[in-house]
Image (cartoon, rainbow, N blue to C red):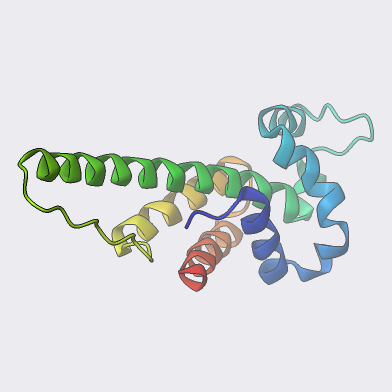
Length: 150
């Protein structure tokens, strides 16, 4: 099952920066409700409180929220493609007038899907200005969170 962006982001902050949990809801909210606008403000240093990229990168929550959004979108797209493929196969079986068995739902992500998600998370975190070592840790935590959920 694909987690919500908020759930994944909270879980990642809990693992990577538990000291940020008390402020998670307030800090993450703009990045979860309007990620494009929040990212634009982050990149343009256009925050009325002077909260720019350097300040945001000192905290994990903004980057984690944006990375989580990218990851959940990729997972949703993968799941949708899989369901379309499975549905088409089932429809072909049904139209052949043979008894069709419903396919089992995938209960976990394949190694290939997890590797793809890790790469998405890594690239997105680096694109947002996170240092490579920290981005690697975040990407690994994303995969860990998905594996724990399945």
